[in-house]
Image (cartoon, rainbow over all chains, first blue to last red):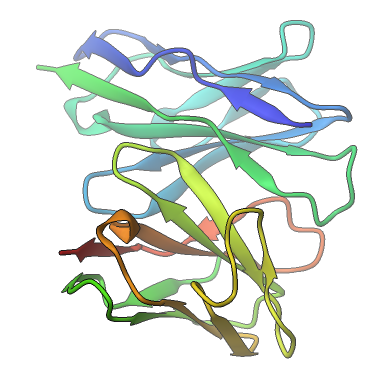
Length: 116
Length: 115
């Protein structure tokens, strides 16, 4: 069965510093991996995805993520954090080992707090 | 990607009543889904809304409690029936634009508080 883990409930970073939000996954086939962001009182916004190809994927708002097959990880990164990046971040995985109708499974979420 | 809207955006309801949430998409989409996000929790899939047929429910969710309609390729409703305070959650609609699309896109959510 597929699963995804976000080991940190909260990440605190000073504005201007680099940030990393961690995600690891478990699938039987090849993974499709996603990051979503949820701002207060808003729905989920798609940030970026890894399907195939280059292990480093770039997304919205200057975020990027690196797919590491050997470590089964897909950490979200940004070189310089902004206060406006403060939000709840979800990692998600879809297992291509199943049919095309396979579900997306979401991690527990990591609250990112950027202090001025 | 499609623009997704939900009505109502929030509501406060009395226990024992029912609330119907609407999800409207500005273009035809193949797949529509309903999720629940309980306070401080991640997203849990309730069901897949199938156009022209009964919804496919996940384990732990039943049609009597969460009846779903999908009359066409741009619209779906989720009803939360006989509500209790435990139903207080954010309910989110999501879509996949076309067959084989890997990404789901989400509506803004409906915040429900049951007293």
